Amino acid sequence: MTPEFVEQVRALIPEGSRPRIVPVLAREGIGDPFAVELSGKAIHQRNAAGRELVKALNALTEDMKAGDTVSQKAGTMLGMDLMADVAAFSSDKGLTKEASLTLVAW
Image (cartoon, rainbow, N blue to C red; front, side):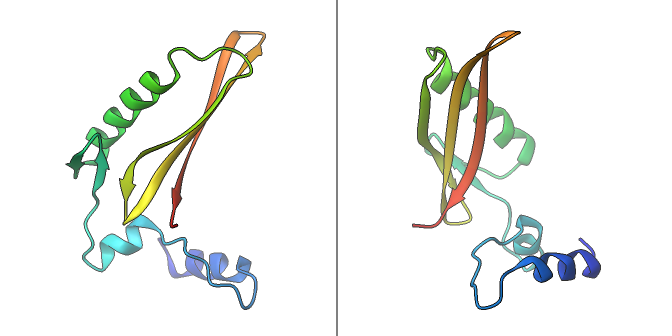
């Protein structure tokens, strides 16, 4: 992450707002190590966390059909809830599932 990138991001933040989005690399740079809690266990390696998250998403979406949506807490990261949102729809390739992950500070 370069200083130029940081300045570009700051320029996009509306004046007076207090964004709560903090890059993971910035947190790690100040000594806050990477950790995700999935299925009740702490995972400190990104690849392992990714594999566990894919398993959780597959289990969450295995019975979905076109038109279904689901939103569920998948774990925690950086002290925030890691939410998984999935929508299933029909496409020319059959059933398609679109997923997004969001960190939410309640």
